[in-house]
Length: 81
Image (cartoon, rainbow, N blue to C red):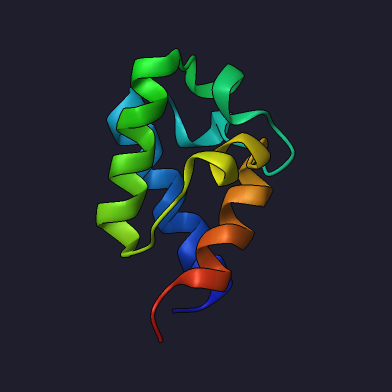
């Protein structure tokens, strides 16, 4: 999967799950603010990303993932070949 295809899929999955417009998701935007995540919905987002993209996100890692661009890079670096 190309990086652009990955970005498109991440945006579509998150927009659908959190009921926002795909156009509201910008690479430099803060994930928690854009998706209006509280601690429980953050756990839901992690579970969704892990199951959709077959990656594992540790607690310390999710703290470091602040923007959508960070999330795209994280998934792209860890996705199975």
